[in-house]
Image (cartoon, rainbow, N blue to C red; front, side, top):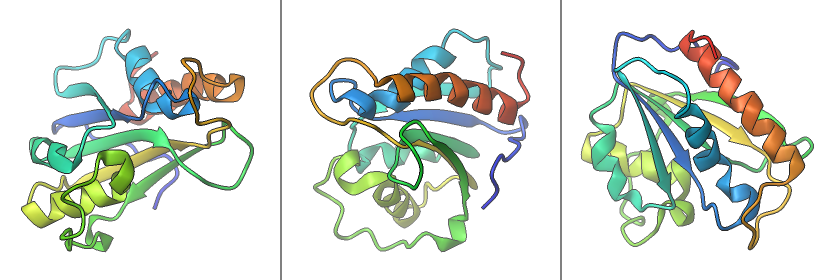
Length: 165
């Protein structure tokens, strides 16, 4: 896993926000995608707010060479801490028999990737940009720490894509 991978602009890239905007800091991914929508991106880059969609979005992943997932994630550090990981697709287990009835947040990104691999739609490169939340619960706003991390995540993604923000 690399800390800041460079994304080749030769293939199709999906930037996917994961989370629930009604649950405070869990809205991190969708908010990052909304901010990125204000930037002119090349035609081969798609932005999607997947919210808390089910693993059925795995069928859409097969259209892309690279997927960047943006989501909250539990990790060490203070709230608002960002982590960027490139996931080795060879390490993803293709057994997804236990995932059929879950939403994306119930199964998590890991479950989505397992399901995608099982049905043959797993992209060649998968990157996760995660942010440690401060508060996940009923709220329409992000904590101050996670709001600052949104700006940092946008800059990080643009840097990965070699795009001026």
